[in-house]
Image (tube, rainbow, N blue to C red):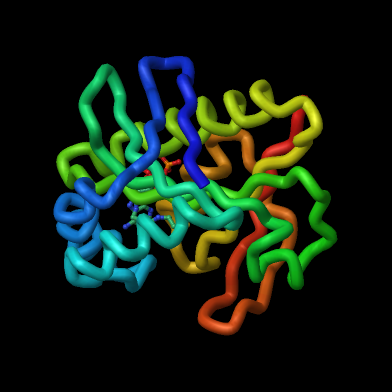
Length: 174
Ligand SMILES: CC(C)(COP(=O)(O)OP(=O)(O)OC[C@H]1O[C@@H](n2cnc3c(N)ncnc32)[C@H](O)[C@@H]1OP(=O)(O)O)[C@@H](O)C(=O)NCCC(=O)NCCS
């Protein structure tokens, strides 16, 4: 699936394609991302992964920018097609979000929470049938839990996923 979205605050999301694989592979190898994503794959595997997602209906791989500077990787996913659907009472139009700020100079400075707030606002605005945007950060991933919380996502219970105990974070339409 491809998804393109203009956000407020100078943010934008564009669909990733296989030409982004070298940079995404570099981002994924950064320790602060590798520790949580565990997707520090070779470039070729990332190129295949982006093509696989783009051809399917489950998720949309995207590159995030602020003021036209690209700084990170975002996956938007349809909860109804995701493993998460087995773990909470999802609604048909729920969106899920995975995020990684690849530019280390921009981590821990409030950019993540601004992006997540703008992104959730834009998804809810673009799709009136959608009333929730969710995420499932590892319970121990304090920066992520803090950033989602500051972006208006509410902690809504622990989820026991196969590879981690996650916190379900839910941003509702206000
Ligand atoms: C998660 C991520 C997107 C958040 O973006 P960010 O711009 O770094 O986040 P923010 O600066 O908005 O907020 C980070 C919060 O974590 C806190 N924090 C940062 N490092 C921390 C640490 N080592 N221990 C505890 N808290 C920490 C910050 O103080 C801040 O919280 P507070 O100001 O509310 O107290 C970014 O850190 C990232 O890409 N991390 C690696 C990938 C990842 O974990 N993705 C999420 C998977 S669900």
